[in-house]
Amino acid sequence: MSDLSYAVDNPATGETYCTRTLATVDEASALVKASSAAQRRWARTTIAERVALVERFADATIARLEEMARDITGQMGKPIQEARGEVRTMADRARKSAALAESALAAQELPPKEGFLRRIVREPVGVVLDIPAWNYPLLTAVNVIVPALLAGNSVIVKHSRRTPLCGVHFESAFREAGAPDDLVRALDADHAVTASMLAAPELGYVVFTGSVSGGREIYKAVAGKRFIDCGLELGGKDPAYVRADADLDFAVPNLAEGAFYNTGQSCCAIERIYVHESRYRDFVEAFVENTKATYRPGDPMADATTLGAMAQASAVRTLTAQIEDAVAKGARLLLGGKPATVNGRGRFFEATVVADATNPMEIMAEESFGPVIGIASVKDDEDAVAKMNDNLYGLTASIWSRDVDRSMELASRIDAGTLFLNRCDYLEPELPWTGYKDSGKGSTLSAIGIVAFTRPKSIHFRLPKP
Image (cartoon, rainbow, N blue to C red):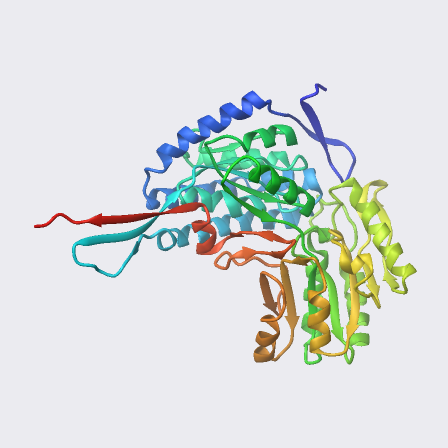
C-alpha cells in the first residue's frame, strides 16, 4: 500500500472493507478551482431548478438504498436496519429542505420610499467544504450539502476516513440526478491537504462535524487564513430529566432507544439521565429490564440486530475507563460494562447501565459515544436544571413530563440548542440544528440553515425621474 493509500476495516469482523487513495495538495487545489467554476454557473440557475435537482437526488438515493446501507454498515458497524433507515431519512430531509428554499431565499423588500428601490437579497458564498462525521455519515452530510446547493453554492465533501464511500455515494447520486459536472464532489484527503484548501480564495464556507478538539483545529485554521465563516457541529453529553409526573411506561423505552440507538454513537444520544427521587427506583428497575430485553450485540448485517459494532478501536478503551471511574467513585454497575465479540470477532460493547452516578464522574461529564448510560437521582426541578447545565456541552436536552407549561419554563433555563418534551435523539428538518457551549456554533436545517450559506447584498437604487 502506498503512502497515499489507506484501508477501512469492518469493525464487526476486522477484515478490510475498502481501500482508498488520498489526494495530493495539487489535486485538491485543482478540485477547488473546478468546483468554483461549476458554482458560478450554478448560481445563475433559478431556485425552482435547484429544488428539482434535490428532488431527483432524493429519488436516486432511494434507488440505491441497499447499496448505501450495506456500505454504511460495512464501514462503521451500524445495524443494517438502522442504516436503511438513515438512507430513507436522508431522502426525506433533503425533500423537506427543498420545500423551504423559495421562502428562505426570497428577497426582502423594504417599505416603499419615494424615489428609491431598497431590497435585501441573498447571494451564495461560493464553494462550501463539508467535513461530515462517520456516525451518521449520510445525515451529517446532507444537513450541509442540500442547503448549500439550494442557496446556489457548490460542495466538496471531505468525508471521514472511517466512511469515505458515503462521500462517493453523494457525488454519484447527484450525478445520476443530472447535477452539472463538479457541482458535488467527493474528496479523500489527510489533515495537511484539507488545511491547504482553507486558504483557497474560492472557498466561501467550511462545516465540520466531529469532536471538540477537531472543531477547534478547524476553527483556528480557518481564522488564520480567511475571513469566512465556519460551522461546527461538535459533541454532546445530552441530558434527560424524568419529572415526578412522567409516564414511565412511555419514558423508559424511549430513553433506552435514545441511549442505545446507533450503539450510542450519536452526538445527540441520551448520555445522562436525571430522575426525580420519588420515581428513581422504579425508573432504574424498568430501564434495566428494558435494556436487557432489547439491546444485545449482534451481527450488524442481520435484520434483528439492535446493537452494532463500535466504529473506532479507541471507543472500547474509553467506555471501559469511564465505567471503572464511576464504580470507583461509588456508582453501581447494574448491567453490561464489558467489551464483547460476535461469533468471536469484531469490537462490540455490552449495553451498560450505571446507577447512582454523580456529575463529577467521567461517565456524566465526558462524552461517551457508546452504549453506556449514567442515571442519577435529583430532589426537584431546580436540582435537575442545575445538574443538566453543569456540563461543557449543550446540544440537546429532554424533559419527560405531563406538564407542558412547567416544561416550557424549565426549557428556558436549560443550556441547549434543542429542548425536547417526551422525545429525544431526533432532528426536525424544519427546526434549526444548533449547539451551545462546546457543542459548536452555527446552524444547519430549517430556513436558517439555508440562509447560513448565503451573504446579504443591499440593493439601494435612486430611481430616475419620470
